[in-house]
Image (cartoon, rainbow, N blue to C red; front, side, top):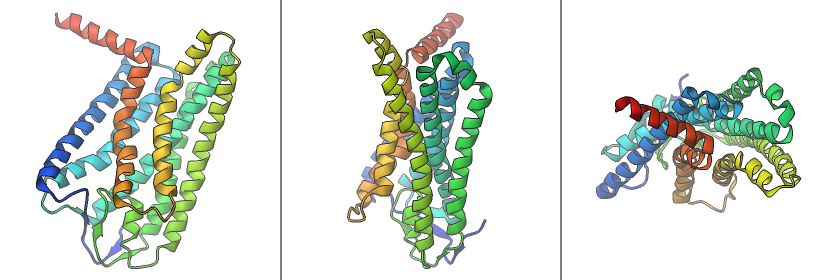
Length: 311
């Protein structure tokens, strides 16, 4: 795929041109990136090693961790390089590739979260049929569908971007090649692109959100019908981590793409982009580790086993 352009590179304006602030930001985001990589890799390792975690819920969680690693790795390394570079440039093809993966991984993540919501619905509302309902084939199909939706969203918007012509300026008012700021640099009309972006985001985003919402309506309804307080707490504890993650992601993403046109703040846009593309991948393993007893128990067993082996 080739993009029509008279420019050979784009300039990512980022956050600040103050050298001292850039060093500070480099250290902050470097630590965040390390925590993201280590946290998500640990989650994937624990799930793979511990047989007790070979269940649908943790199958989806391991895929979510993989998506988070990819999502963060698409954005953060280039950002770190630019913090230490005088010329914060990215090639046209590099920018296009980054945009493709951002679109792909963003939608894949929200559909995996929807699959996790459906899994909790099946476990809490229909526990006797759970093993049959959420068998390996169904789980694999749900993950495959998530990646297919992400690929479809990325493909539709990328094909239309390839028809645009970029003749300058080449300064992107953002720290990464996200589609909305990239469209502002086009020398040709972007009405079709904006309609396609809005339509696909609304259709796919609303579909995912609706599936998650309906699942939790039934989950909450079922939990409220449980007579014992201990039973209600136990049922809710199995989905509380997922609910927190979903809330963080949807609140930021919805505001970013659906906010009124009267609200135009580059700083605000960048802050919300940081939230859902950098902070959320870091927070997911932390939330699931702190709120999930099974993950903490499995992690403790692995640490104790390795400690004994070393002694």
